[in-house]
Length: 301
Image 1 (cartoon, helix red, strand yellow):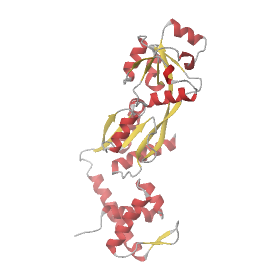
Image 2 (cartoon, rainbow, N blue to C red):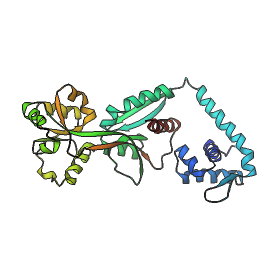
Image 3 (spheres, helix red, strand yellow):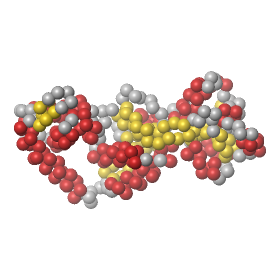
Image 4 (tube, rainbow, N blue to C red):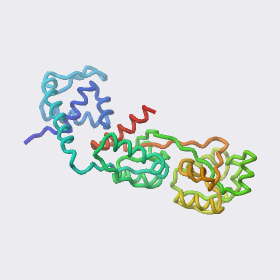
């Protein structure tokens, strides 16, 4: 019965190719400690070391390591060929969680580009606010998330992927048109009735933090409604229920069509949108390819 696993060989080849445990861990989307465990397990199975640790930063293959490297490389290559030959199999599932802005304004293009480049995969996209996406990742119902708020730096890794501006939406009526003509900013409108997003919304968090940083008590805001759907908020704003802080990307078409007006804040309120994964994230092949695709795309921008 074979006791050597494909994962051990994959990690071994990655360490040998990169000549580094750290670089191998980055290429495999593993922690360095996980890579070390796989190598230790392989050495225990073989009963001999495969790497010689020269110092903390330098390693080299032992004679046994050099001997098995070619075999291991061939095994990994053959497994890759088998996966490619199985192109007729059902698409690999990519479970993605995203909050409102990335799910509507950024991910559709990314998914289209990824399918065009990488082919056989199928996305399962789950939508929620930033808090809910973090919970999906913790429960492993999704493996990769896209959010507008950092909530757990201890257990999660965050990579900025795009940006979004928060503006104050108002009805397109005479009162607010006059404010526009006087070059008013969103800060000048804070005495108006305001429609807020739900408490866990990233947009709401950014807005309340802006108020705090500018010495404006949240209690001073005249909150006329709390709505958890951006489309319903925009419709309510257009019907003069109140004004509302909102993603400029989400509201772009409604602003262009003149359904609502947008006022920028005195200090431009721009936030990052992040790709988020668990720190101990051991990616499947399609997840690994997708994360690498997004990362490489950022380098090209």
